[in-house]
Image (cartoon, rainbow over all chains, first blue to last red; front, side, top):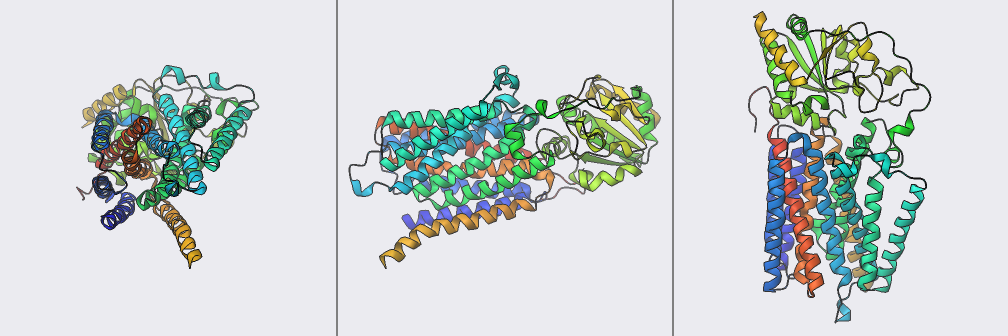
Length: 469
Length: 103
């Protein structure tokens, strides 16, 4: 039986790797997750026959009940959630994984071996404790991340969670958890009080770490917790001698780390900057005074300008997604394409709430992925565009990032929208963006502001283009 | 020979660790930005394998406390695996090319 199980775990690991490989290309991505899914299914089924799983009818029953409850809740949540809310769903599922890893370690630590020869050695227990620490941090941190992105009231005000000496208190909690954890492992103590205290410290640290971080930085944090969970799973896999867990966990750990670094780089911030600092304290000195005026434009005129353009680049931002305007925008683009206009979509790495999130939202509306371009691919093309249409994007098109050293976003790579012949900005009102700064693009000579709800404006743009033909 | 056995037992997981680490790095380093979110969600699903470990932990549980923690572990692990799968699938379902449907 043992060999069969090992063989299936091996097959699972292969399916995971192949699945992830397929997921890294848009044409095969869909099949990739299915492959990985089969791997998971196989591993789960075969684990019911695991020799370490006693033929204890009560535990089997509990196992099936737990899988049914956990699976149903998650299935329901995953099916119901709106695409805009995807990042927080990923956060919460990730937290569950971290929690599960921490639970495995807890069972391992609390176990009293009557037969002392079966008792795991100190180095195994150290692994278990490390996995528990990382898993618990990932769990509580992910829950906080979920709360922030879901905009729950309690988590809303980041400043409320910042206080003097926070860094030092966090460090103290962390070292407390490390000390307590390693002494539990070394002394083979299965004292319930100490183990509970250890978990409380670890959970507390995770929450304390995530609480002061603002919503805009959350994607980086979620990605980091994702890598953490992978690592915790690998460590518990080592403890249980389960190779599928080790391989899958480490792959997630390393790919998650790389993804975290790429995300942070796209936002022009270092990971430590995200964790230990915040936007508000970054902007020092006086911000350059923006000159010029905001020039409004009626949507009919905007439609005419677009209808007679030969090349249009659309720059969608999170504001478009919130207004659920992506379907209307695609409908409008199709009309323009029928008229012979070249339409392209330009995506900033942090458009939406995560790298690639905007692509998902556009894909949901039916925009083919070969019309969607990354910042590096399209930035030179703005010079040849007749119209750049900015919908609900703000900071990612602010030229201040290029030329205003005092601006808090100075140095962040931006889309060169200001190089287009004409710029149209669809915007709800005159407010500032996420970073809380004025955008000089809106005041530029060639920029016109089309005020209104993105969905309503898009509808009247469609009407305007239709009226022309 | 005893020492060799120990060395093999100790090092083989470390080899797995190292190779899997490189593999994860390789897989993601060539990914276009448009797939970052789905892929992050995909890796999130992959660490749902923790369910298997939680099942083993619950299977070994003897006392009520161990059973309760094991139960929680399996519940959370199943949540991770199932939720991760369906969220990823929903996202990837939408990727289409303008040149017609591709498999």
